Length: 252
Length: 252
DNA sequence: TTCTTTGTGTAAAATTTTAACACATTTGTT
DNA sequence: AACAAATGTGTTAAAATTTTACACAAAGAA
Image (cartoon, rainbow over all chains, first blue to last red; front, side):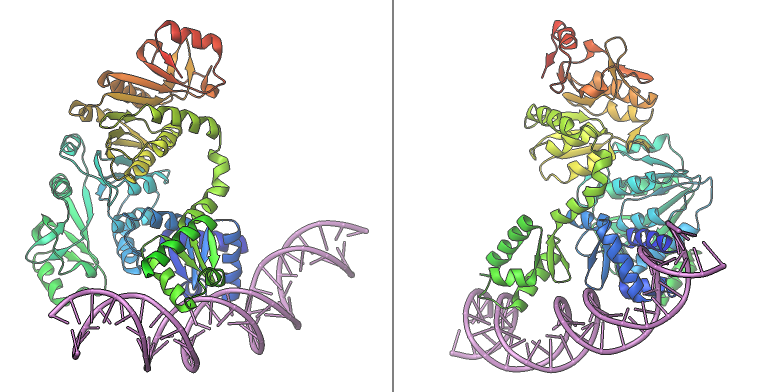
């Protein structure tokens, strides 16, 4: 059915931000590119997407781009991020309660999370809004001063929040990692927050796309021993993987 | 000078919304299309425009497109809301600190607020994101459970937040008002939050568009005596206005 | 000056989009 | 059921656009 396919394309575009015609083609192998083109044309006329050379992008994504500081460059959700997020999402079970940070990988995770009865804590404004779309899911926003560059909150005040909240799992996306310096981020208060999240949670899953490896940011918030599961992509170096496995960390 | 030309292109695109390469070429006959292409590429990388087949469009234009279909949904009483928000914004002075709620009128206010050095507390996710765009303005998000219907937070936990925060002014938008029942809203925790905001603030300004008059919601959070200024529209009934003035409340 | 970087133009190559037509499928009408 | 009209689809060729590669000039830096 055409309607269904068009709807599916729209949703896909919403998740991915941008898709080329060839990517779309692999998603819908049973129709021709011409048909997909016509679908995109229709979506464009409905004002839901913008066609660009090579494919199309979601309007939401464009708006985010315009809000620049957050959407950093053309840093659209790469395939790696989405795949990592999907892996992470597959680990979530009903009735659990978890913490997610406010980074772009976390945003991908938010989109991939199933709409089931779970409780999610987050310090990301965009993440919270995304999650609020899901009917069965419960969201709690961690308050604090808003960091404009990544639309997350962090502040010493946030501590008081944690005192009365409990979650089993913390899923964090790191923006830098080296074996020596561990997982690090750019803001001290954010690092504080994540450390606290680690203490509160029974387990910590770390999402790390391999492009972050070798980078160092000013504030370390976790070391190898702190995490239980590492979720990464196929480019992850084998020798590094060894170091994780030695410490009984699951790498996937 | 290249910089100048690029700037000119950006402004042109801002005005026209969309331009083809050929149109651009007629505007800048003394450089080749290839050069213009490279200019557009740079603007795109800076996140200021979106390149589409044939040329480029301004990000603003894209947003307009996206708002078009949705606008009708949210368009309820929008003109009034904006006018009310503008009045409220005109009352804000530099270096003050204030609380704004998360409603749609508050969202309008967020857009109207000048980008000056003020500190804003809010429990609205969308409001926080909107305010985060402003460079000189400081935003603090109040945490709590996210209410999906209005993208605001509210929870008993929020109380602890208030303990360590101070603001002079609370600007609240009510979703229902009668003289007997005062200003009310649909959620108890939200009412709690707003009451607390009232206690913390030196003064309280209430934004009330006249369509809310006569409506009653389950939880009253403020009565006539609690507010200092009422910001409303021209439809506001004269007899009601009397009641406010009797209590030395400024009505504007 | 001389070297490097940056901006530019030209033309061919690669890619993408559009147009045109044929055919199948669905829908509505008698 | 039969028919016509409308809609959706696939295939191709043609048109248009973008990218790439290379050459060269201008502007800065050493």
